[in-house]
Image 1 (spheres, helix red, strand yellow):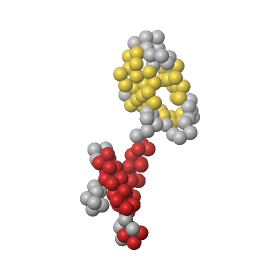
Image 2: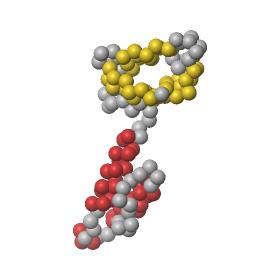
Image 3: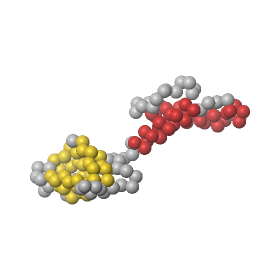
Image 4: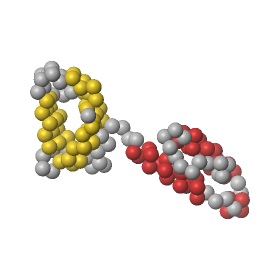
Amino acid sequence: MIAALPDTVTENNADDVRARLEEILALYGELTEDEQEQIDLSRCYELQEALDGANASMQAVEEINISSNNDVTLTEETEGCQGHTFTGNNLSGVTIYVESGTHAVTFSNLNIPKLAKVGIASGGTMNLTL
């Protein structure tokens, strides 16, 4: 079973890899201690680390709807920025200001027919995707 595991974890095979690892570890738990000593789980550990890393990078992006938020200030986040996606319609104008920290910002399906202001303080960084 371990030999049949893929070499890498991808977005397309992550669920399958996770299921296979759970099955392997369940069977491993049923073995005697002597039998367990004969099994090399290093590939399983490598794939599990890859899955854990993928899960960390897929944490939720904060969605900010500008229809109800005219002024948005982004500040440094203790666990790092997972990203902010700005969406929505705003007829009166919007201000987005990065006060501190590094932020991944995406503008998606925005409609701002009036003034839109984007500012970045000297202690801030914005990585913008349009």
